[in-house]
Image (cartoon, rainbow, N blue to C red; front, side, top):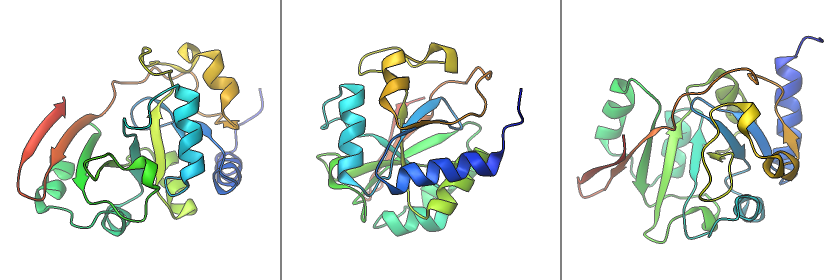
Length: 191
């Protein structure tokens, strides 16, 4: 078996993301369908592939705090504490996102964002210089696949590129989700 080249995988993903295509990639939680989070047509493709109503928002991954601050009007101080203290990947829902595809923003003007902890994801997002969508690799209402082998063939054939890394890994659960309102409210959506 040939050795998989990390930088080749990054470059193939970047090419697809820049052209508005979809990738299937391993994240810090489960395998995800991804696209340019600033491209409305690319986001629409994700909704179509998942057969999901576009009123149900998707998660967005950023590479670091600076990228988070660029795409959220006001990051509450508590968000940094939650990210620093979390023992597992944690997605935070923020008020008033900016510079993101309109069809990625929920009707209440919120956006679910996670600072990626996975090495491949961080490198990819840093090189892409924009957030990317991360939604589980299953049809709407379907079971979230815990390994590459469990991913539905329709999802595999519906993306433009499938990353050739971590295909043997059994993934953990999806991220925790916490809603942080600018008014100080905190709500745990998924533990």
